[in-house]
Image (cartoon, helix red, strand yellow):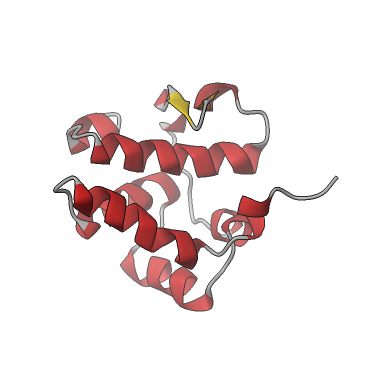
Length: 116
């Protein structure tokens, strides 16, 4: 079976779109980064390295230091799919990130986005 196109898309090519989506709604790059750190366990240096290496999403998530233990609390619909029902593990992780950035752009507080 052929890999979904997003799996082989570089994270670095999508990252600016996450930032633009957030900034268009009055949020910041720092908030987007904070969400990524929370979800994946990356820190600023490690995230920048992923961007500089232009790693694809598959590699980005495979090399993530530690997926947050509260990811199961991320629920809802993104791109027409309920994130909690997505069977492919990698696609689910990508959609988790999409969902969190979407919540940021919709004005949710960081406390709610980070499931505190």
